[in-house]
Length: 80
Image (cartoon, rainbow, N blue to C red; front, side, top):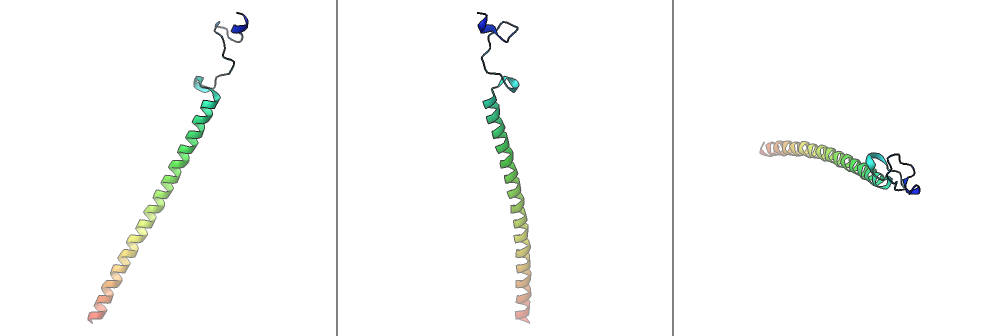
């Protein structure tokens, strides 16, 4: 019985593996950390693509306005 109670002052047996943060094992904490890193990377990629998409849409709108302006002036030149 004395061998089962080593390392604990409250008399409860130890599992042999030291617990990590919040009582979770280190492999579980490692997996949670990896998932957190992947989540952050995913959000950063999504936000950067969204910004580039918005920039491309603004460029397309400006180009469409320029095309409409040129078509208007071409129509006026043809009528003249």
